[in-house]
Amino acid sequence: MGDPGGLDIVIAGGGTAGWMAAAALARFLEDGSRITLVESEAIGTVGVGEATIPQIHNFLAALGIAQAEFLAATNATFKLGIEFGGWRAPDHSYIHAFGATGRGSGLIPFRQLWLRGRAEGFADDFGAYSPNGVAALAGRMAPPSPQPTSIPDLVTAFHLDASLFAAFLRNYAEARGVRREEGRIVNVEQHGPSGSVTALQLEGERRVAGDLFIDCTGFRSLLLGETCGVPFEDWSHWLPNDRAIAVPCASSAAFRPYTQSLARKAGWQWRIPLQHRTGNGHVYCSGAIGDDEAADILLANLDGAALGEPRPLRFKAGRRAQAWSGNVVALGLAAGFMEPLESTSIHLVQSGIARLLELLPREAEFAAARATFNRVTALEWTQIRDFLILHYKANGRVGEPYWDQLRAMPIPDSLASKIALFEEAGAIVRDEGELFTEEGWGQVMIGQGLEPRSWSPLADTIPSGELRDYLATLVHAYRRKAAAMPSHREHVASLLGLSSMKEPA
Ligand SMILES: Cc1cc2nc3c(=O)[nH]c(=O)nc-3n(C[C@H](O)[C@H](O)[C@H](O)COP(=O)(O)OP(=O)(O)OC[C@H]3O[C@@H](n4cnc5c(N)ncnc54)[C@H](O)[C@@H]3O)c2cc1C
Figure 1: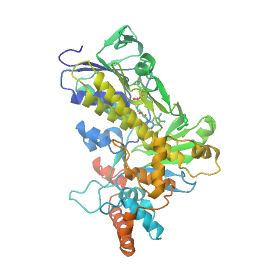
Figure 2 (figure 1 turned 180 degrees about the vertical axis):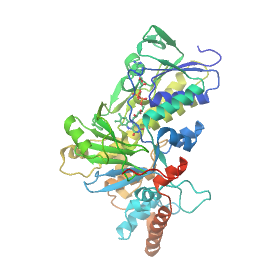
Figure 3 (figure 1 turned 45 degrees about the vertical axis):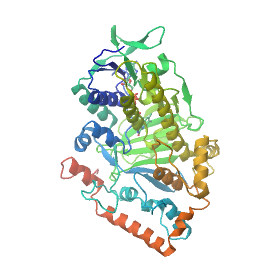
Figure 4 (figure 1 turned 60 degrees about the vertical axis):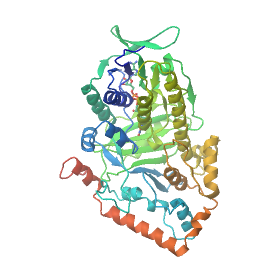
């Protein structure tokens, strides 16, 4: 039973997950709960994880962090979406851009109008109807308009420096009373009959006791996995990539306001532009390619000089069968891992924290909260998993063994039925609580080259000439609006209070 003045909450691990949890709990728990975070500088953090999705704004706003302060503290840049290069064919690329694509009419989703326009031969590329995608490729960025306009504002996320982000959150959390204990956890004490965790033993014979433990110890999953024995659900038969090699490089002149995900022989490469460098990594399948070749591919495809030695990382796709067991809740890599193809891991930390805060009772009796947390978390992870598998299942790289195998693999029924629905007549239904919208699914399905056999009859209710004019008007309006925006570099400079930002030589 916790102290009537709140709970003793112990966060194990001080990577992105640990410090996000510490900052949010310190900001929102005003019931006298005491928060302690234990981390070990000798072990360190995973140090990657630099691309986010738009929901990051909710996290920063909830913590009262201003955008300009955040940008300066984390060397962040804006992200309008992800370019998938070479997934459909070696020389093809599309953008999964945030925000809407086009504008539907009444009950008719825009995607249906576009499918008909394409069949009649007058539609542009689907991406030409995305305000975000058009601005991204033009290297533009603009804040929301002060007045409502007929063209939607850009929907943004950030690229950020992972180490600076954790340091920034640490300052925030410590300023709000979070106590930090430096040192390696050498043992986890449990209460015999219940199995509840009672304390962490640290090197140097220190002990940190608590009512609730948040496991943010990374891939090791020291509390939830190792101590509580919660099994790992292995998803590597759907997502077989199990290694990455990461290296930063000097910034390129492009200063792209989007992440790049470029398909390679047996995996894909990310490029994440920050203010001071570009983050790069090659995610690959060790069964299909050797480590040396993977490193060579990465180093041959940097768009600036490498800064430091490439760093190898190993992982397995999947998740712990329950994210909350007894009095241990896992966040971040301790809860599971899905490759960063759609930049979802930091978001999963954020949504886990929000769910925990929403459900956390006043006293250390968690049974109902735990059951609900586990049910909703499982659903959230499997929905994202399906979206990631779609990228591989629908690849178009015929004749390459790794990609051929992925195209042929059996997929979860939940994804198979989504694909079947889309192939019938372009319909997409977002499941309850699902992170990715119909817009996101549509961009990836169309971008990867899935072909519906037909379109909704609703789209036939507009006369052909009108539809042609409407599609053309949208394309021109989005291009015009993007052309009038400042460049991404100018926009970041202005938020930082600089007259300009130096371009790389
Ligand atoms: C290759 C790769 C690319 C990624 N890219 C993205 C991306 O673009 N976007 C995104 O959202 N996510 C991405 N992620 C995921 C993202 O990096 C993580 O979700 C995020 O960094 C959170 O990590 P963490 O805090 O859970 O773990 P870690 O950073 O590993 O932190 C673990 C912490 O636990 C501590 N610890 C462990 N054991 C002990 C012990 N015995 N005693 C004391 N302390 C201990 C460590 O010291 C450390 O502080 C990526 C991950 C990988 C592997």
